[in-house]
Amino acid sequence: MKTPPIAEDRYLRTAAAVPLERDRSFLIFAGVVLVAIALGFKSELLGQGQVWALALGLVIVAAPALLGYLRGAAELPRIEHYIPVALGAVTLAGLSDPHVVPELWKYVLLSVTFGVGFILLARLDYLRLRDAEKRGHILVQETILLLVVAGAYLVLVTIPFNIVLRLVWIFTITFLASYRSFRINGVSIAPRRGFIFALFVAQVVTFLAWAITALSSWLVVSEGPFAVMLLFAWYINRGLVRHTVEDSFTRNVILEYAAFAAILIYLFVSSYRPPGQ
Image (cartoon, rainbow, N blue to C red):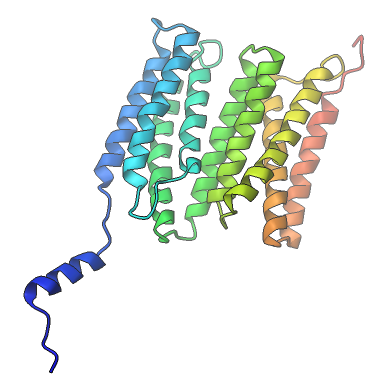
């Protein structure tokens, strides 16, 4: 005759079946700390080189916070979970330049937006790792990633860089954003395939940036349209790769990317100025 389990065994089994929920207040605290560090970028006591060093420090502070919040019993969170923070740090470091964003209140608003985005993405990544992602979460992740990439592109084309260094930064930002998208946003692509696909997208966008720069005698492109053209190129090529892998091309998808491609071509053609004009 089988006897029922003793009270201690019953308690242990029940406790093991209940998933551990992370404390959201820790995530909010981490977001506040990151906003405080980002506000320090605007200090007049720091030179531009020191600001970029402090941006690296922001990533170093954010990484353990993400690790502590996202880690599970099976494995540590992969590199794609840390990419938005790195891109956001690059964006805020560049936007802290008085020539880019001179108004303090605008930069404070951008810093707070960064903190809110950090909290949202960390929470959504936490839910995804535990198979608790809902339908609208992908849209939120996609929107935040688009904003961060757009800001990073704007910084890279606005701040005076050596042309080679600028192209290297554009390639790096595009690769990281593409890899994050292939791994997190939507159906997850295997790490090796995501790495190769991200390289393809980064090459195309970097080539476009090089072409616009090399044709500067014929193309008059200001910083805003330049960043928009790079963003459209990234969005289109990344989307084409994903829909090809997923075999999810539909009429609406084709029309969407055709419209963005038309806008990109229009921006490229409208910037043409014959020499001497």
